[in-house]
Length: 142
Image (tube, rainbow, N blue to C red):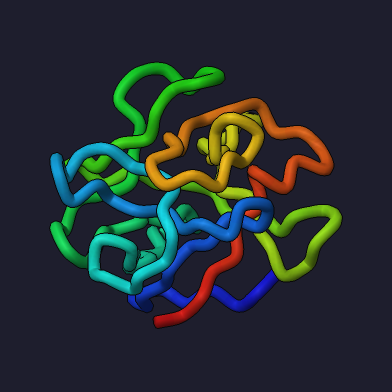
């Protein structure tokens, strides 16, 4: 797993599609896959909590990566004023990639539609599976 440091900014790229986790500039709420342009809405500051979990804070808005409902397949990710602690685990097949997981579950952050590379593809939760490259994320330090 790539070294991830607390209080550091990253752009988070999907291994399969090559698109990045983007906070929609039109509503500052929806979390989508988008071609990388490097704007602050695509930059996430990672903050490690005392219990080892990670918060993802959007640089443009100060909002946190979260989900609004239950941790279930298809649940969309959103930006929230409330922090949320995620688990980050190395991918079993690609040591440069990670899985971003709901704490104590097998639900992971997933680029929907099997990693559709089109701009605007929702980023959701889904049950972790292998090889599942649409669930593998590469952290690129800004």
